[in-house]
Length: 229
Image (cartoon, rainbow, N blue to C red; front, side, top):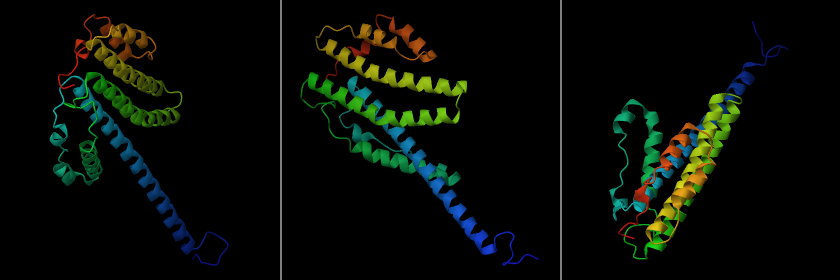
């Protein structure tokens, strides 16, 4: 029969203490992973929400009262099935509050500052939204690459993220240049974009886009300015 004062295994108090310490470490790690995952989901959803709003503003399709028209998804039924969905419910509620509090920039409808100032504001705000999102995406890509070092799938994911980063940045600039053309400046924004596209990572999405770029009417909608600017 085991005793507490032998020279063998640690006594039951020590084993219990070790167990509680391990459980605390596990709980801390779970909390950290949940926080990091939640932060990634939130920033990703925030970026794509702002991207959609800014694209609609650029094309003249953003309602003046767009903040009042925003809603968050109803998770009531999902929460009844899976309480873990509370994370997504909280993220969307926080996102709704933040989007409704977006400052009234000159890129918005009916600001009365002239198209050039509105276009400049749109460019700065679009690049700022991308700047806030891309570092987080790089962290995810680097982590995935480290975890799957040498695997072809990891390389493809990394290349795709690099393509997306370059593509989105260049499309913002191309839209800006197209707006300048609509305002009367002489710029070959499609030629500029074709030149930039030759530097993108070699992924299938880039090849498809390069084919579309040779259409002389590619994105004619960008070479317009909103009436409300």
